Amino acid sequence: MLQLVGPDGGDGGNGGNIYFQVDKDRNTLIDFRYNRKFKAQNGENGSGSHCNGKYGEDLYIKVPIGTVIKDVETGKMVADLSEPDQTELVLKGGRGGRGNSHFKTSTRQAPRFAEDGEKGEEKEIILELKLLADVGLLGFPNVGKSTFLKAVTDAKPKIANYHFTTLQPNLGVVKTKDSDGFVIADIPGIIEGASEGVGLGIQFLRHIERTRLLLHFLDVSGQEGRNPVEDFYAINQELKKYSEKLSTRKQIIVANKVDILQDEEILKEVETLAKKEKLEMYQISAATGQGVQALMNDVATILKTLPKEDLIEVEDRVVYTLEEKQDQWTIKEEDGVFIVSGKAVERLMGRINIEDNESMYYLQKSLKNMEIEQRLKEMGVCEGDTVILAGWELEWYE
Image 1 (spheres, rainbow, N blue to C red):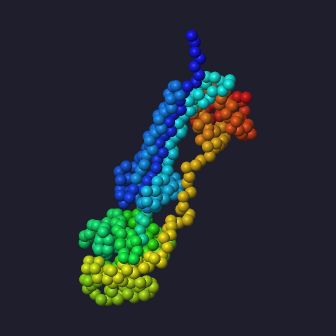
Image 2: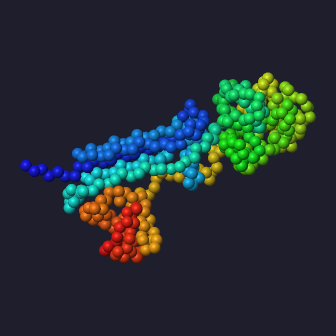
Image 3: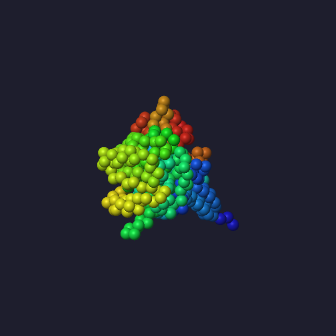
């Protein structure tokens, strides 16, 4: 006994998506220095008896809060991971192909062609960490910022008397009696030329962008032989070169190391600077605690007057989208050759068997339905001309 068997090809599984997810236990992007390529799992092939392939597993990439993702090609922002546990879809996996059962019609009972799966999206991106801190500690290396952070928070930064800066910011939470507290970021020391990328300057300046208040630390002890007034203007010049908006962020001058002050004139010069720039000034010793509590009390009060605004520039907001027109295609003519490209054409050619007459008939019908045939005729295509469809070179005939 003979039994007629219809088309029974199962669909392929979709490829996995790639997500970026905020991880509260991460505070640097150091892992991405050594691992720069990520790929989600492929979907499995479909098989007979209408057995569909398994979907590929999604890939979740963990990043610290404050991570901004940018598209290398356009320079535009893809995602701004600024909320706890935030998860953003950054790349979609390819869609699985469809089995031949989808192409059965009343006149085509047993189609000998199916649809190939689509490739997943690929994108080269840049990760930037822009810390979400209320207060940023600003100043040249070795002015006492790390000592201050350790004194007022539970943070445990490396502290040593050296002229080199730390390589990554440290964060700490200040607990206050009448508020929920606030976050302080010890910004690694900025040097002249930072806005042009000298040293690790650009990375450091990026960390300051989201702080609401800057404490500008100046070493008034005279031990290092530096001029704190010159240091103040040098760093503010770098801020202005990097971002006009950043240069206008509220600052407080912190004259540190007063416990080992060697020359009263240095302190007077800093006081004159504060008056000239109309900035508040505090004399402290981070090492002994002198003046620290008064400074912290006033910082807490000032922060109440500063709104928690979104400090990302308006023109940098997310413009990239994963949604694309699924029916999009373009045609261009080069030396008498008509080149048809686009997502829709790639999908179409993925389900065509050019050695099968039935499949080629399906291609011609699809070109007509998609209005590609009409556009080719408007552009002057003639019998015998070469038409390239998503990389496939075919000869046009009426």
